Length: 335
Image 1: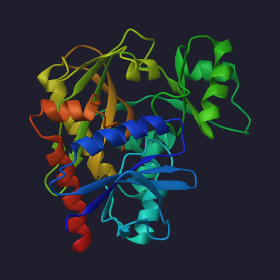
Image 2: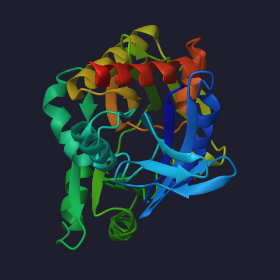
Image 3: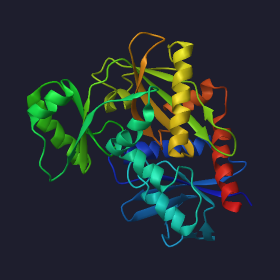
């Protein structure tokens, strides 16, 4: 019998619908000669699976479901939730408890990378001369906020305000004036319990995807992100207001350095499966400063998302990449 794969999507954040699009993409990418794949949608306490022409509730005691033809248990969970609970370690902890292998890094890595402020402060002393991380200030919902004048004096203007735990640019504001800082914090804190105020980075935005499965670490060709919007916001990401150029129009030496930095970060954190690391390159072409923006451990997986683009540019087949991730974790579980 073929292994049964749950493509776990949805979640409890503003990225729920984006995640469902990624699930549809993954379902189309999977090797159906090797696996039986079904989408499991999670939202709050509503966990259900689309099986045949019907929808059945998931038994959360063991992540199984009962259909007209009997009880079914999954062999593997491919997590494509963007946001809580699939990108912050919560779902990973649940799968660890019930002994179900999954596609992402473990609980600690997921929780660390989802918290932008903690991640930045973890990596900053490890960056050395390889890459730079912008200065930032953390603000918690319900706690006293730092004085606007002090933030501006420290970080300058413009600066960015973003949810500390979130993605797809929901709740992100480019703040140009001091008067706009507090409303931007209100917006970010609506999306997350914490907000981060971050110094502005200017230059060329790029993103580098990579993965490790059963085989060696593989880095994909780098994508350059070009938009006429204020920044790479939700409208640019999902409404076509961006050009995504793969491979990026950067010097070979810069591409090599970015790939090496990405591999180093992957190993420092102890990642598994696919991640995507976003950067800003600033300075003279070929000798740029590499500025880390963020790390995505469950990146978008629609047909037009960065990772599928980069996989195609690498001359690889996405179904083989996914199979490598699944087989690598299944082998670990068996050993």
